[in-house]
Amino acid sequence: MRRKRDAQAEAETRKDAPLRSDAQRNRERILEVALAELTRSADAPLSAIAKKAGVGQGTFYRNFPNREALVLEVYRYEVQQVADTAAQLLATRAPDRALREWMDRLAQYAMAKAGLADAMRRATCSRGSLAGLGHAPLTSAITLLLAANEEAGTVRPGVTPDDFLLAIAGLWQIDPHSDWQARAARLLDLVMDGLRAGARQR
Amino acid sequence: MRRKRDAQAEAETRKDAPLRSDAQRNRERILEVALAELTRSADAPLSAIAKKAGVGQGTFYRNFPNREALVLEVYRYEVQQVADTAAQLLATRAPDRALREWMDRLAQYAMAKAGLADAMRRATCSRGSLAGLGHAPLTSAITLLLAANEEAGTVRPGVTPDDFLLAIAGLWQIDPHSDWQARAARLLDLVMDGLRAGARQR
DNA sequence: ACCTGAACACCGTTCAAGT
DNA sequence: ACCTGAACACCGTTCAAGT
Image (cartoon, rainbow over all chains, first blue to last red; front, top):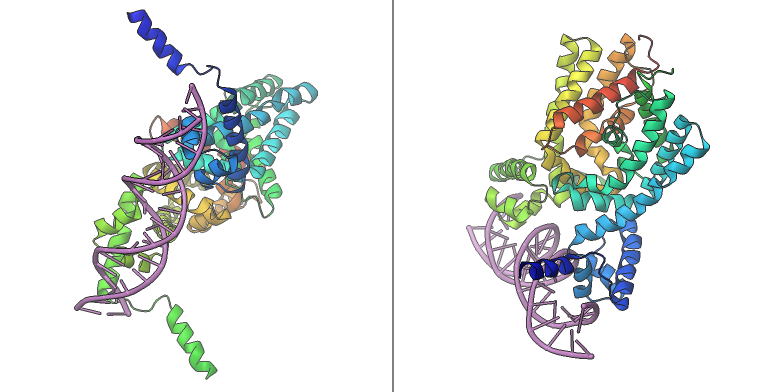
């Protein structure tokens, strides 16, 4: 008896249960449209996204129970793309060059997807530190970069990914219009100096 | 003729035109309630604020044409309070101690008014860099602090208030629950190190 | 000159009815 | 099992009617 109920519960919450192919297509279309719309405007109406994706409201809510869930999924996927470039940079450059170039790419990303980042902040800010969840994919990339630099003596020991993320938080506050390149560069220079302070190598 | 029209236009847009005393009271009550409600929850309904302040919807909108206007006014007043403490700190401490303690106070403020800060971000993020407007009162305080430190050789020359604000942007991203004290301290230490790098005195 | 509150528009979310 | 779209709830904003 107990077994049967457990099995049922498991089947119900199974994330990788195969979706019917039309459902699968719907989900992908929603994500695709959502990326475009949210990037353009952080407060794009969900109803507009559903309509552009060619699905009913109900279908939309079947896939994403609320705005937060949708934004989180879109955001995480995009952030993952940037995170994945860290390993490649580390393989082809000196650790401190790799770190700095990775940050530049992150800045470029933050500017290109400013609308999406705003949507992320708004969807999550209300419920405490859910913002952290969006950055989760970045953490392992940052860990990699920091470890390499620490070993090379170009960053002081003991800096955590959390420290790093807080230090570069200003990136997401820069207006994508105006001269964001200069402002971002000055911020990142300052952060690099802060990270270097107290390192072996000077 | 021309004169008359100009005079009329001036009178209409005059900011310091004396308000009728009941209107004045209404405005103050709205601000008072808004501070309390927005601090508690960033998305407090405006209608609830109007009701708690004991005014009709129309009166509310006569004073604040939209959510943004209200949030901006509340936020700026509160931020001003912190900004004003900079001069006093500079008069009683060494420049670098004053700078650091001022940042600590800013952190305390950011945590206490986290809801208000969220409201500010949401109201402004949509329209580009309006966020800058909210921080305007901080700029002069920061200019003062940076100048004193530059002269004392404890901060490298050329750092602008904008650089500084971007560097500490992480403060507003820290969750007021959990151990914000530790996280804020680590961030501010890092920023101080970054500011010191390249200064005369080491 | 200023206030009130009903009315309107818009958006997120739900749900009964379909296939 | 999944979809649709009308219906509902909620909130921001406006405006005709009052004092």
